[in-house]
Length: 399
Image (cartoon, rainbow, N blue to C red; front, side, top):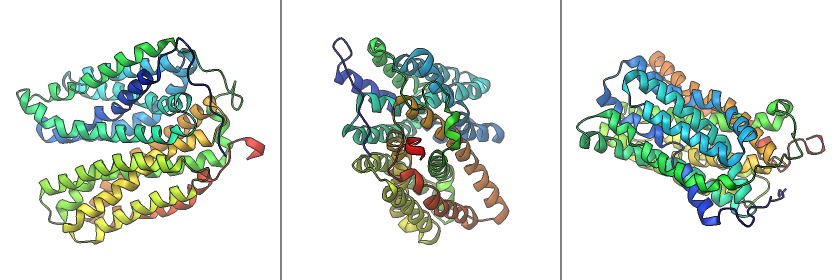
């Protein structure tokens, strides 16, 4: 069921090129702030508790702070809310470079900005790139999000050494693309505020709590993100335990992240061509199951294959929800509320993943139990996510 496309631009508003450039640069910053931490951890000599907090804070904060995106959009308008969120992200990056206390506080502040951007960016896509372009632009959104984290992960250690072995300077490097994105958003401030839509207008997102479709999307997004954060944290350790060198295990993770960017582009691009998305949901879950099973059971030398398959599935699983937010709601406000609810609960679910995987590994002494639990969750997700893929609009005709 195709949704009506709202008007994109009027005379006097920023041109398509300015809007597209700003959008791409904002998307590039959605994960770049977190990409450099992992590679720098061996050089930072942090207390294990602090290191654990750094890996747990981003998904936890993104879940807790996601509703702020909708709040900011209602109060300031979408363009100003985007600018404010990127400004908060930039400040958080700079504070993060001020010692251990600043590292923790800055990570929370930066996560607040990213949480708001996670909600605002899909709505920005619907408003400015509606109709047949929405799938491609949601693909660009997911691809740039994954690619930004990968770029920062690749550059973090070289910047660290070039800066005289200074991890604060290396982490502060993420402020450069954030500041550039901030500058490109300034010309967009002249765009008018979004009019209130029909469904959900005048009420907060809590109206969605009674709709099974919203909870179906929470399950789909939350479990897909949970798998992603477990893989991001533990894939190299899994392969090291299988006898692979740390350098090769790191290469497998890098290839997996690149595949995440590829899956993030192709997943929503293909999904946007259809109104019913159950098949797309099942395919991305099947790719994740195949990749995880191969990681656990296949010889370590074939890790490249399973890492790429797994990355494609995880990337598609994080990109397709952006299309679902648009297709399952009647207007901008409903989409923003659905995006906020799904990401609030979804990221809170995801934050438990690395901790549960570590606990299961410590209890069992191997990776069979952690990966087995992930496989079970993905099978459950194949059933739980189907309603969210069915062609309908939440609240229309009582559905």
